Length: 174
Image (cartoon, rainbow, N blue to C red):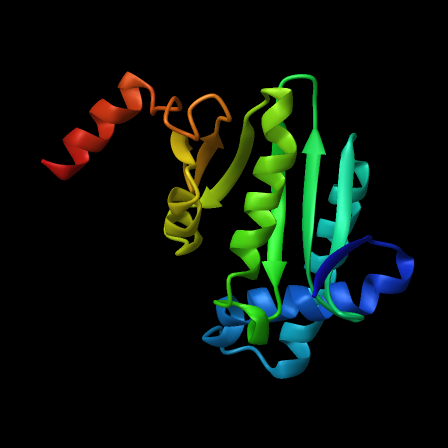
């Protein structure tokens, strides 16, 4: 059974393990030693955690299967939108529908408020297709990221790239 529990200081070791699980492929071809990669990932992890801790209206939950931590979901909420900051799972739990369940659960929770859910994804990240399948639409491109939005009013179909961005994409494809 999948459940959520608020993240605490006792979860730091797991969160670092998760960070490494998600980011290791980025470092694999760097030519750095295992020790150098570990040190750099630790510094980046601490920076990420400090940044997340400063975000107002943040909800940071550990995703568990039974009592075993397997991922996290981090959101922030403002008067106008919910931001999906991060949803990630350790490798053995990816591709099993758990991420879909988490995002669909967030959509169901947010829908009665009428607020959109927004997120940023790297332009070439395969997760972009995952979010599109869940009704998120491109909103604006700001290299190297794409902002996406899901709207409860239309299930995600009312967010569009601005005309300038659409034109620049058309020129790039020509």
